[in-house]
Image (cartoon, rainbow, N blue to C red; front, side, top):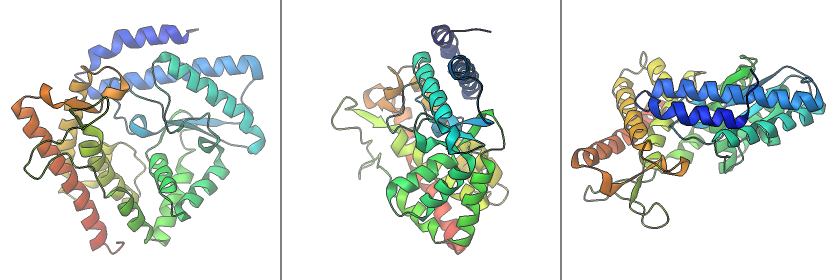
Length: 322
């Protein structure tokens, strides 16, 4: 099937609004759309530069990697390939075309440049392993952020097992150097407060989102960070937060409650995203638009998200790695 990026965008605009009530099907739709965009990008690069010089895999990160996209989403992706540095130019060209195609289809470019057009995220497999190992040894905030971003990755196209050896290296290093867990905790423990001392919601005080609550920082990230922290410890490959909670339940039954709360929050966020004006608005909800029961529910999720993270920290402390 020979499609254009514009045809894919038209299909997206037609289909996705109807999937708002079903987060799982919405993310399946995102995968289908991104996969079709990748195939089109591959065709265009092959016409100019020939076939790929080595086997490769295209992988998603961020909310796409975790299968937690809303109706709007930005780009977070990379390319990993067999072979060596001599092949990188080809895959950087492919990454640039994928970035261009996804933008045309309706996915905003990542502000942090976490895209396969960036050499940091377009690497030979062996060099990617070395790069990730180096990040673990660095003490700056950006290196830890890169580790967390990469860990929430999954292959969408190409070699399905290419990421596993890189993640194995993360698990091995953390097992040998458990003091690194403390750095992960320190990196994410300062969470944005969504409630004031009198229990009131704390909306943004200035800027284009003035009067809106930041759902991403006050609710979403605490749940995600809790599951990721324990996934590091239990050596889980799955990137989905809900899947991580499900896999962790056997050892930590208390997480069943937090899994359900997170699932309900995702449904609420998706419902509100249908009223947003694009990707920039999917993480914010105006306080004036909330009924009393919704305000109460947001405050509960804020509490439970922080509790989930504190629980994860307590587990690691009892296990002797903190």
